[in-house]
Length: 190
Ligand SMILES: O=P(O)(O)OC[C@H]1O[C@H](OP(=O)(O)OP(=O)(O)O)[C@H](O)[C@@H]1O
Ligand SMILES: Nc1ncnc2[nH]cnc12
Image (cartoon, rainbow, N blue to C red; front, side):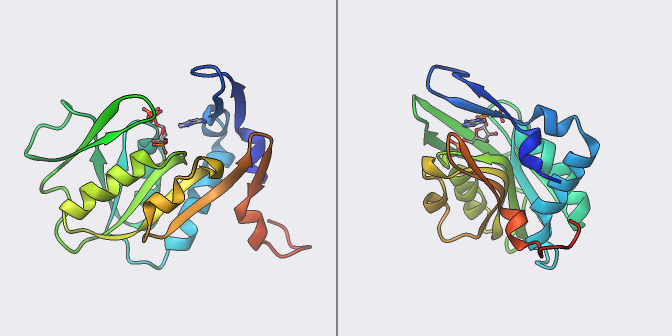
């Protein structure tokens, strides 16, 4: 199944010059959604993941099913004003302006093995903030798993030294690579 066929490109959204990768057609198709979860989980099946952590909102869509698939718990990372207990916070710069993410101080126990999940890696600002929050929790970060990686936006180096896995890599606005297909054997169904 070619998951690229389920990602819709919307030019100039949410502002001129941005090519928005719309995953709603993929989410609406049960087989494409299930294949996405499987491909995001695959490198981490034997990694002893205790917890999936993810930032709202689109990350949550993938984090819940991945937690079930990997036999792990789920811990939310949220925008300010959403979590009720004591918090770790991390403020970070976006392309324009700044934002902040938070996690409960007891969401992750020191040493727990955590996989971070999001739908898409662009500049890496969101996932880098998640890494900093997990470091405040003394978590053992197993890696970061994405459905989509927009490689030209330079997010991956910001996640060093952590393992980064993505299912669909886009190297330019009109070129895409299905990384899962690179591992398939020619002639075998898949
Ligand atoms: O790598 P970055 O440049 O940080 O961009 C990636 C982030 O952008 C999107 O979230 P968005 O902030 O649009 O919020 P949403 O999940 O609520 O739609 C996406 O879901 C990632 O979390
Ligand atoms: N180009 C893009 N498409 C969809 N979501 C995004 N989040 C950040 N950049 C994005």
